[in-house]
Image 1 (cartoon, one colour):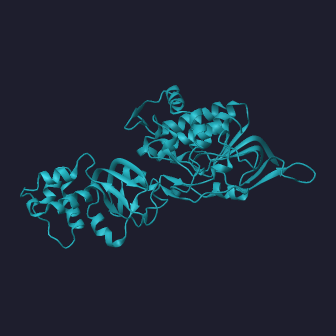
Image 2: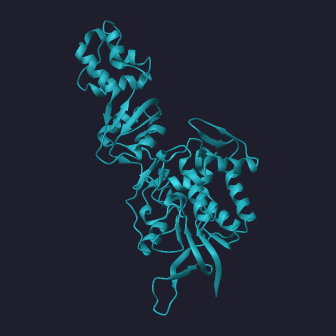
Image 3: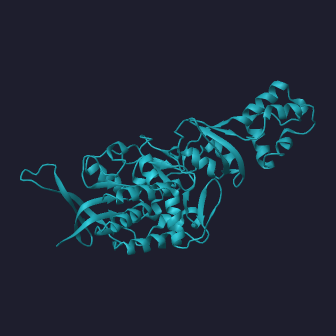
Length: 403
């Protein structure tokens, strides 16, 4: 027996629940399916367990896409303030950590409970865990042409029929909590293009011959400006036993491509050349001078790395040309990662369902009426700091008005 619903949403994460809420408010009968046994694990682990649920300063420029203007419509119709109002409605206390990033004072579970409560109030029904085994379209007309009246979903529980099908299954990041390629497979099944995929907001790793340097500095953090491919971020970077992490590195990883160097300005608040030349008569060792602004252990290792085969000297034993060369390295130290830490450590997936195939107003597939894609599965990827959650809320809201 086939069970009929107006809307079926596959994926009970941030975007999926938001869409289900909005569709339910319109009086649509909504079924929310998810293969996981625990609700919204990605929300639960986000923000160190406190959920960086939005960013006050969200703008289209905070997102990457092959079609960079696509996100404007949804972001304009559901803003950070709209979600803040929802948070305040539920009495959740929150704080701004930095750079517009908003976190729960308590835990991420408060956001999950908020969404679950809103779903229940909107009459949304649930099936969890529930695996979809087959999806197909229902065609009308004697000739079986492309005019579609809905979708059939076969699951390990029941068979469902729906007018609208919303794919909110996320990307490939963090497979240990259930991420899969399901959404991309659905897109390809219905002839919808998926742009190239890769890990984003992810630590960068280095080749074996470089790891002696990096692993020896594991745990050291530096306030630096990191740039690559015309993108630039000023935040902390963190040395790990495999390479580099920290907010600045996670940000730049979305722009980095294999074989391309990353530039680090280690003294972003200083004119390094003028500072070194002011001390050119000093008898201090170069690492000791650098230790005024950089961690001492890093300063020593860095000096040895940029001058292999040469002993570290006192400042007055460097020529003016050498000091200018050292300053240039401090201002733009180039290092070339060998790769990334992969989807297991990535916060999001770069790329996804091609936005040129979707309506920016409704999130509906242009050539498959009734089929919608929202959230991380779409080729819209935000910067670090609450932007990807805001895209989930905004895209889910947009689809929920029409599905």
